[in-house]
Image (cartoon, rainbow, N blue to C red):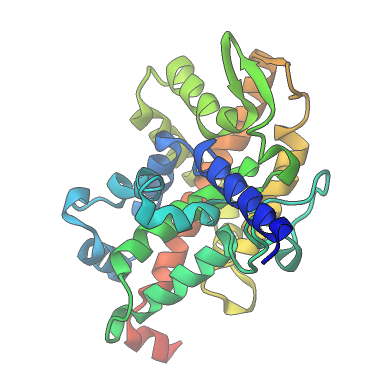
Amino acid sequence: MGKSGLLWIGICALLLLQMANVGVLGWGNEGHYTVCKIAEGYLSEEASAAVKELLPDSAEGYLANVCTWPDDIRRDPAYRWSASLHFVNTPDFECNYDYCRDCHDSFGHKDVCAPAAIYNYTNQLKSFYQEPKYNLTEALMFLSHIIGDVHQPMHCGFIGDLGGNRIALTWYNETTNLHRVWDDKIIESAVKTFYGSDLTVMIQSIQKNIANVWANDISSWERCKYNETVCPNKYASESISGACKYAYRNATSGSTLGDDYFLSRLPVVEERLAQAGIRLAATLNRIFASPVKIAEA
């Protein structure tokens, strides 16, 4: 291999390492906990039983307690390969998502992105009632986490700014970047400002909105075309559309974001958390439907 080839591999490796370290790998802990806590309330009996059987002891019986695991292990050399599974980047200023165009890692390997990972771990979990061939505990934790990730608009953001990580700005009086605003800062500010610094109260508020404000939307949130078990391309398309409409708008490098941005974007964040939780539950319900029910369908 020539020097230019080695140089290109080195550049790609450096980019992948950079992406693993700049915060492209999740809602914050609060966001992932919220998604999985919402999902727990919509699991069928079969799905709830299967989930509890697969959960590690550290979960203490609750899926929400291990929904950050894929972020927790991302710097472990044994899991460095998973960095590209948490997001999908779209070409700069393209406010639409296309699987064939966009689902690849920084080396150009196809089918390495959040939607592909969701399909993969869904298929692994479908073997639950068969002779296990996979680590289904890890598959459950990855799936639950990445379904949350793909609903965060900046996880489907532009490649040029690494989903907003390169857009340095100020959030009130704090120096941060646009990706972190959507991962953490909006949720943290909401919990502090409106929910008495108690995440549980925020989750309860979102749950009430699901039951009342969004009640008529739940069936459309859950539904996938062609009777698919999961439809992450739909979720990614929504996210990049939302990134262009809400996240990137009025948020340029060097800008200061305050009340106007926060108050107008918080409803978007809360709805995406709700959608992710409902869709995670619907996916797990379809995956773990008993073989008898599947045969009768």
